[in-house]
Length: 451
Image 1 (cartoon, rainbow, N blue to C red):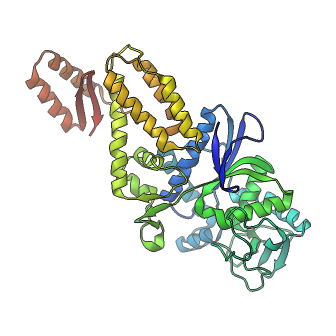
Image 2: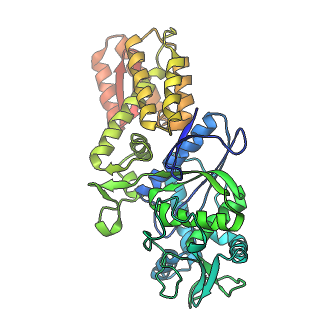
Image 3: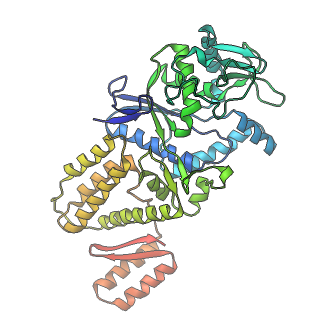
């Protein structure tokens, strides 16, 4: 039985999708004004694993994740660079695609952009207007949160306790300080679209409500995103969608991944502890970074450091070295109880996607295989590992090919070892090392890897 921690009810609940055998998910994607950072990567990997495990469980999954390609940050950065907002998005989106692909993240089934959904955004605001949730000020159309009785329930706050959150504009004319803008009226030099209230552009929160409505309908299964989005962004999404379509609509389950911290402080540019994925990939294989994310439960914070990455690198190399050895193993035995390992893996993952526990199953299997040596059915080991790696995405390293000349040298050295010509064996080893090929002699044969 799969259990998910639901941020709305604030407890673990059994996952029971709206339609049997299907799971529909929406995850808030990035605002594409700058390169992807570690926080983006952590969220993307977390929900990539959720999606893949749901598929592993046999669900037909529809996964939607957006790009926010119009907001204040986009406009400010485009002005700084002397380009249009659209040109900025065209420049930055391929960087996200490159870095997410390097992390082994499967592309969404649908990846909408906010600017492609102006029609739906306008229709949604009109629906809110018809239900009495909106009012108009000099600078835009606003949502009156006092009209929505459940505002604050997701973030666990009351209206009296709420303060103005990030990205909620301060405006003395507002009825309530936490009312948020749905449609911003046009300013000189900013992109704008026509609407019944005048030319302008959408507020941040309404974009995601419109895109979920368009691609997943008024009601769907899982809404995910980073913990920093819970308030105000997700809180406002609930208010908008339920205000437009009625109580009990929108997401059935809410999931939020934890922060990336550096020295126990949230990663941020203002603190000077900010790392892009591009920065980290220059020093570490992206699979090491994915492994680092999976070592910690998705809801817990990660206290990032080079030490953490080095530990992940060493652990991942142990797994990859084990798999390389398996490739040349000749064991035919079948003493391993794979059902036991499969059950353990699924028990951890069914417990709110506990990837840390799931990884422990991999290392337990490695330990038993290494103990049994020849009494192992290698084919079954590989089949089991491939099954769970369809979720984890870290067990099998990238396939690296070598030239025919290098392959011939490796075989020649193997022959020299068998003939106990250790002088020639060492000479070939040194020759290959100069070409960036490291050899490892195991009880099952010689394996190689790039230096």
